[in-house]
Amino acid sequence: MSRLKPVRAARELRRRQTPAERILWNQLRAVRASGSAFRRQHPIGPYIVDFVCLEKKLVLEIDGGQHNEPGISRRDGERTSWLESEGYKVLRFWNNDVTTNADGVVTVILQALGLTPSSRSSPSEGRRRTRRPGSG
Image (cartoon, rainbow, N blue to C red; front, side, top):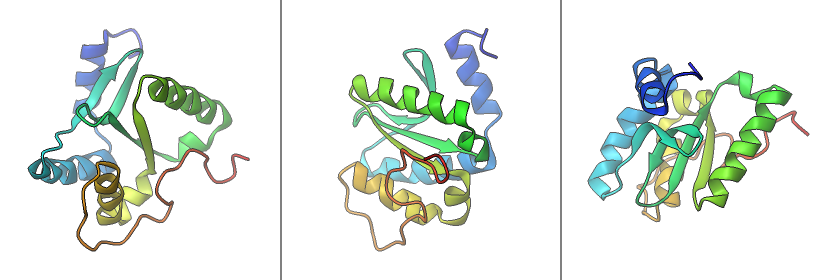
């Protein structure tokens, strides 16, 4: 897929959403009422991010267990650094956070957008994850 042009690659990724991405996308569509619209599988520079609110420059990445592997974890860090250098704030969540505590994940996202969430629980991995358990 890396040979596909970014727009075609993004379309393909949208067609092949993970269950966690599907859950979060449904939750983010409800956030739109607050005035913050998200796009999914959106190209930014050399990357295709899982979700982005362009207005607030907020990127959301949903990671599976393979993101614990050293090579992937290092590339994730490089990707996050590049996005942050372009003015984006990057929030990473584990698939498990989204599938077991979507309300908590949405609470963190609303806080990052500067919105006041209703009383919800917070995700198990915390607010912003830049280091993964067992990665040092």
